Image (cartoon, rainbow over all chains, first blue to last red; front, side):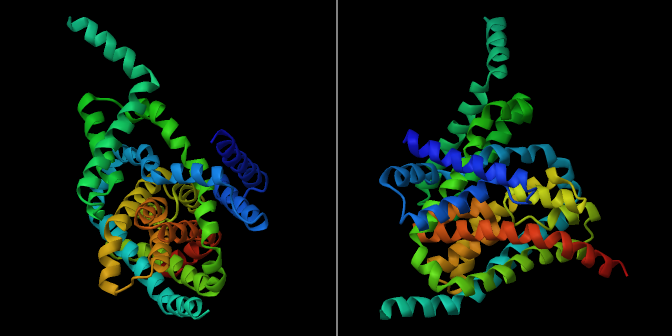
Length: 119
Length: 244
């Protein structure tokens, strides 16, 4: 568990160094994720330990958003001032984006599933 | 007796222990409720835990900074957890190979829809320019979204709040929406949820299935990338167009 956790931190660190060094607009952990993914592709998958540690960490991914979420208390009056346009824009655009993405993907996904089953 | 309790409170409120314990306890309660509700999306654990914590902090007059001194240890784990998303993503490699092109098409369409429709709806209902600029990147994961807002001239801290609210909305509403659209494929559901509702949507997707979560993680990463690269170009142009 310790060695898998160290590995995750090392990839995050490399991602962070690349992001800062090249002044990329993407955060270090996202670059770390892409690098680890490429490593797994080259090395044919994660070991058991890495898989277990990742599962443990991701099982309660929701928990990790709570501290940032509580930050909402700093913005109550701003939200109160413009609540209607902000609320409608958030609800409308979130559902529109999910609808458009899902509809574009639906037909090709069906085809891909059929191909996989046909094999 | 009373002065001692006061001293104890003063001591506790200056150590990280309190913020950390409160966060975990609130999440435990939220998770218990979520499980009792058979993982119904309306009982979203992030939403419940945040509501409880905001209530407790407001009632005890504790400010956010004091709370965050303790809660930052939980917040820190977001970094390694993001890296760990590579593992479920790898498990979907065969599916990714057969669907690469459609995924990129859906990414472009969904990413533009998220940013431009938020901007357009907000503008139509008379939100201020600064709110509009802070609103546009709201479907993107927090650190990227804050960076984009900064380069657009909006308010990064307002963006952070709008991002969280978007994530909760997406996580709560996804199941109903896909039911309405008759979309059953977990890869499609996950990809659309991660694109529109970033990490909080991804967390919910993992609770549905591993495939759903992996595609959500993929969409979250890709949408962050493409929005960061495109929005700083598109939005000033759109602003200019609307101003005429």
